[in-house]
Structures are given as structure tokens and as C-alpha cells.
Length: 611
Image (cartoon, rainbow, N blue to C red; front, side, top):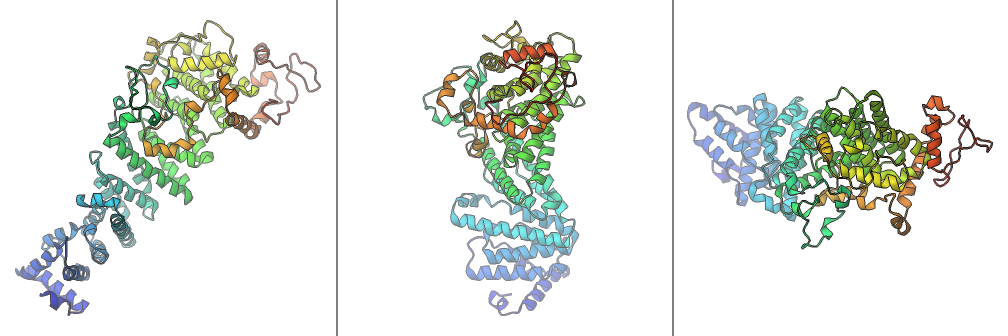
């Protein structure tokens, strides 16, 4: 038909002509049909009359889908399904979306084909990628993706099983890690949009787990060699740099120096892509928190963490997804994450690598998360100390890194956390009694964790312990001159899990801007030996930690006070010794010194100083 004739016909007449063109193929007449297929190939630089013809034809086909046959009209279907909404204005895009929806709900054999076509519109044609930074490009992106999302919803309304089919199509069409352009970012953006919509009620958890899996795949592509050179006789605390952007360009690390460096990632396309995807995921978590559904999403993240993240070998950045989720809701997500980790560690039925990885994550998390209270951190440490003490009581053996790797990983985790938190804890004598007295028994055990754990951690821990006069100096506690030994290398194993601190500072620039406000850098820590630092620096952060413990841990206090030494399992001679070291004179409630009995009641003080 001539174009001017088409515009003179009513909608029903045009549909009738299109049906005739479709049915004429069955009798061997392909002229009208070929003209119809030719219209579908109009894509770029269309004149106004060509745009109108394409729009009209698409609408007519939507009304004639019952006449389309998958065998006889395969060329027409191929032309329709290869069209991209990114190439057209809003009117043609609307007509195309209407046709795809009509085709999908007309016959089950077209469903997957139509879903694939819609999913292909998640990403623009290659020529359009550079335009996404321009206002017109962003406008077109919004137009296309809103139409794709609306089409999914319409299809799901008519075909209840469509979301499950869509999930398969989305996962199959997900760009691989070798697609290092912005296309994968837009694709993931659409996946997260699906997760948060109505369709996400059915398939959201699987979509979110797929996103995390892709983050891990990108993460492991960034080798550790691109980030650091390691010499484990160096102190990991001394080498941490809060902001490497402040380092002069001329400054180069010494050969073999352990140094985290953001500059080493400059120009790394995989790192930049991972950075963009992490920020996209963070923003999605923020929207979940605003919508009140973060708790549900966090359950999926926990499941994904246990299945993939925890078992991944020394991931560098992907784990910050769950860190950020915890920061958005510390009282629920934040505490749940730590509790899950400690449960994995103390559970004897878990595989050894899982337990060691879990306690590494726990140590790094408790040390770095600014949003965790002192009382909660104390409760987690107490569980680790109690487990290690029980282990010592049931294992009368000498040093053996290979046979007791889980035990040594627990000991190192405790010492690592205390390197960050010790000053706050030593200001509360009761915490010294609950944590540090049993810890001293662990460290003095024949298994001798001080000789096995990572020397840089042991050295910093003992340096602070010495300054705080926490332990009686003996041959077990060598405070100076610690170097790595064969024992420490053996405990870490070939994978050197002893050197894995998952929440070390994030080196991805955009990602770091989200993490930094809720992150504890080593430069922010006040070691017990740094008296000069105390004189010149505001002590508010430590005071807040102590006050948090006083305010939030009354239940623990009430469960402790009023019990006899026998009920608490405390050796009286050891208790008297520790009180003398802590410069505390025990008194009864009447003011007289007590001998062999615990005072009937100890009143909690109202200020950290009086503790």
C-alpha cells in the first residue's frame, strides 16, 4: 500500500490490511508481507512520514497478533524482536512496547522471545553509550526503561508465571565480567529496579544474589599484586594509610613494603567498573532502607554472604555491600551480621576454612564498624574469649599450628579487635575482669598463641597491653622484637588466611565516600601507649564508647552482681591478684575490706571515671 493511502484509512481498516498481508503468505503471495517486513527495518534518521508509518504499522500488528505464525512469519518476528526502543522517540517506543506485550500474552511460545527482547533493551546500542552523560541521553534512558518496566508488569498481570521466566532470561542475559563498559552498570541498575518492584516479590532475592555474585567475579579479577607488596615483618597498623591521595606523586614504597595504595588501581578498568557497581548497590540499599524493607533484603544478603562471599578467596571490596547494609541499620542488621559470624566460628560442625574465615570477618568488622556500641563489641569478644578458654581446658597440647588453626584464628581475632578497642575497655575495670583475666589464661596456655599468630598483630597488642599494665610480665609475653616465624606461616596455611582482614580501608574512590563516615581508620585509634596523643586530642570518642557500655549493659551487670565467686567460676586468689594490678581496693557495702566473700551488691556508677 502507498503511504498516503495508509494515513487515509481508519485503525480497523489498517489492521484488516495487515492481516491480509500476513495470510497472503500462506497462498504464496509475499509482496505485501515483504513490504510489511521492510517497514520494521526502519530505524535511524527517519523522516516524519516514516516515523508515522512505523508507528501506525506497529499498532496494526498489535491488533493482528492472532494472525502471526511463528513458522511462516519468522522474518517478521525476527525484525520486530531485534528492534531497540533506544532508536526511537516516545510514540514509536509506545507502539513497539504495546506490540511486544500483545504478542507475549497471545501465545505461550512467544513469551520467552518477548521477554528477551525487553531485557535486551536494558542496555543501549553501543553507539548510544557515550550519550548517556548528556541530558538528552539521560532523558532517553528514562523513557526506555520506564516502558520496559511497564511492559513487564502488564505481561505478569496476564501470565502469572512470567516473572519466573523473566528471571531466567535476566540471568542468562547478564553481561559477563569481560564487558568492561558502562553497559553492565545499566543492566545491573535494571536488575535492582526489578528487585524493588512488584516482580521482585517473587524473584528479588535471586536477582540480588546474582548481583553480589557478579561483584565477586569482578573483585577476584583484581589481583592482590595490583594493590600491595607484602612483607609481613612490617607492622600492618603502621602501614595503613588513611588517605593515599595526600601522598606526593614522587613518594614510592620501599621494596617489599606492605602498603595499601589507591594509586595502584588508577586506570584499572575492572576496579573502576566494580566501584560504579558497588555505589549503585549502596544507593539501592539506601532506597530499601527508606522504603522500610531493608530487613528483608538483608536476609538475602546474609544468605549470599554465607554461600559466596565467605568462601571467596580474599575478596577485597565486594564484602563492603553487607558492611554498608549493617551501617544503615546497626541495631538489627549490624548486630545480626556479627552474631551470625560468631555462631559460625563456635559451631564445631562447620568446616575449618569457614570458621577461620568467619572469625577473620568478625574481627575486622568489630574493629572497623564505627556504628557498633562498646557493649555489643564486648559481648562478641567475650564469646570468643570463652570459646578459646574452653578450648584450652580441653586440649592439653603444645604448639601445633596445623592441628589448632581454628583456635589460633580465634586468638588472633581477639587481639586484633583489642588493638582497636583496648583503650575503651581498660577504662572499665569490670570489662577487664570479664575479658582480660580469662584472655591471659588463654595466652599463657601451652598452645602459646603469641608465638603462632601474626607477629604484627601480636606486637601491637602486647605493646598496648604493656602500656596498660594488663598482664604480668613473664617469658610468655615477649613484648618487643617480634618477627614472623615458621609457626605463624604454618597457621595461616598456603592461603595465608592469617593475613586476611576483610574490612581494611576501601581503596575504591567512590565506594570509599559511602564507607568513610562510618569507618574506623587506624589513625583514629588511641592506643594505650600514646599518652602524648591523649593530651592533644579530644577524648569524646572513647568516652562515648565507655558511656555506651555503662548505659546499654545494665542487664549484663545485673546478671553478674550479687553472685558468689563459686557461682561465677572465679578463682579467689587470681581475683585478688588482678584487683591489686588494677589498683582497686575491694570493699564491702559497709566500707570494710572483704576477705573471702563477694559483696552482696555492687552499685553501678553513673560516670565512666567512677568505674
